[in-house]
Length: 368
Ligand SMILES: *Cc1c(COP(=O)(O)O)cnc(C)c1O
Image (cartoon, rainbow, N blue to C red; front, side):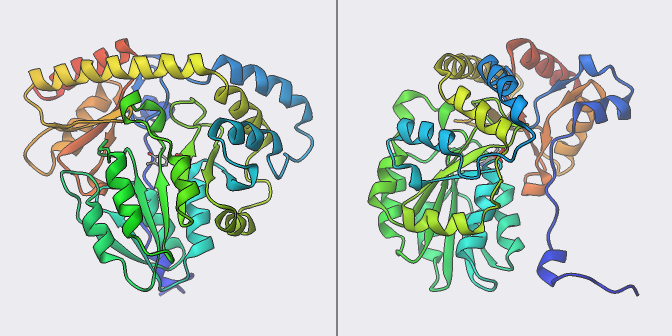
């Protein structure tokens, strides 16, 4: 037998399963790339904002130099937007990077991390990557059971991950429940509140999470430019936390973890209110389109607060895989979620009205 390299906890990791790229599906199924509809990775159907494209073109001339390691201008823009000092902000190569940095900064091998069943796959990866012990709390109505999560915290727990809204289920936790949870969590535990889909929330569900950061010294709020801001390919996200937390994050992160183009594009996107509004409006309309179609087809779905919907496509455990394959053959890419323990379900990102219509027609055909 060949030698087994690496620690047991690394060999135990199940690699992240990303949405299939368009080019790969075109090759595998002999389809024209232009005809393929991808609703698999919760990307922004409008793509990159024009304002970001222009900012990147201007920044390209300086690509021979290293990026600003401190992200001065982007942090200044975020500081103004969220009304927190710049040294409360950590930039990440996507918010995925923020989650990984948090695990490395706050958790030692053997200590425990708490997160919910059916929550974002990266929480498990970040936990396992540092040799920590995962305490996975059963979901309640496909969302976080915060009372149960507070109850399982142990003396060696160092981190809790919460996704709000949650991916892949789309569930949402109201502000009062989050605050009740924060009041219960012991101060030795860092809470990472991952708000990747915050910008899609209706105004009545939005809350100033930065205000909580002022109040709770153990809270970190994580945000991304990958979803509502349309910059998934550039990889940029950020965290807001008090300086004693941010200081540790800074020791772990790579000095140049956010590249120059990403920094320039993010500043432009942050100031592009029209782009956000257009996206939110399209998302709300697309959600209704899905709700009507699923209702007509008699399919159960989880009410969603993000830019995607989890829909149950059959009673047998092969349903997700089978319907997914039938959709791929028709050039529609969605996300099977068997790896999340949801083999009967598919997660479908909300696209442009015409893309949603193509998916709905293909789904009808796939279901026979
Ligand atoms: C998409 C997503 C992220 C992060 O995406 P990045 O592109 O790494 O910023 C983080 N959390 C959740 C819950 C997500 O769905």
